[in-house]
Length: 402
Image 1 (cartoon, rainbow, N blue to C red):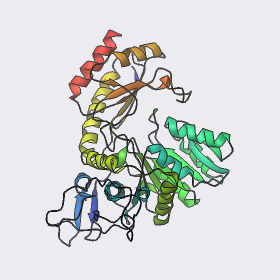
Image 2 (cartoon, helix red, strand yellow):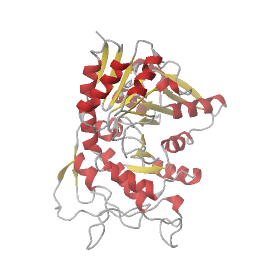
Image 3 (cartoon, helix red, strand yellow):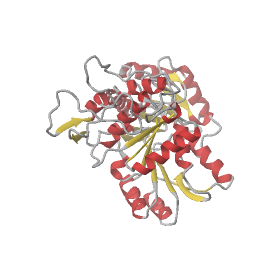
Image 4 (cartoon, one colour):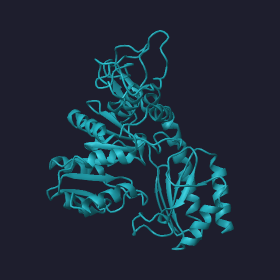
């Protein structure tokens, strides 16, 4: 019997109570403090708005006669003086629409709406947070994490910019013990990339908050549809919007979301000074992609659960992990077989990254930066929206052929 770790998630609580002054849409030309317009046809009463509805309705222009339904791509580097933008490194209307949408999705059930800050990549977002750590500050981070962030943390640690303390985030006692010592930042991934380890977010974030320790949770894998760390006490939620949020493998973007207005302003300042502002075109594509996020996550995780069950019965597979739309499989330490399977599929795309409408797979240790404790034969699979039986047939035939 093969080992299988399976986590089929349900959206935590996908309704929000929204009052007239809290349904936030983007005023056409305001960035720092966009005016919020209540949608036509909505009364002054409280409304329970499902997250699937927010994905479609949030971040829209005001409903005035002949107004566009979507915030247009504003292709300008310079704006007329006297407003809140003036220069595109500060942001712009198309970027603000994306930020409003992501903020609302992460704000469900929060007493105060969060703010989002968009970046030109996930690494740009990560570096903005790390740039706020004081020189020599202690950073607690997972032993397994996204390779880019892990490499950046090691680089900062090696040159003495930070004191890096790596912990197994699935071992709650170890994380709590690390938090007991003075630190500047707690960086979490849950689930981790690619081992799909999960942290007890309620426990560790509560402890961090009690000790005044700033916390960040990379929510790229789960998305706000399956997990909202701000509700558990995180100070900042990070997304590589390149992946599941935008969902079409056609852009690079990142985002940081926080309920702390001062921190949000600091992060905007880092974005401006570090030159990490996304393009209006990418922000437009990302906003359009998020409109179908709930549907894509629902379809992907249902298919992933089916595949996890069938893969666990395959004699050549020694271990299966599953979380949401993500899977990993191992081949009994046979890395060459793993490579052959990745190269034998016809529907599954042998490619890096994840979260697209297309299903993809890769052996993670083919990348030199991947953590040495990640099994050499581990293949990460990102499940898209194709027909489940087609995906299974393609994968099963690749397993049989190799």
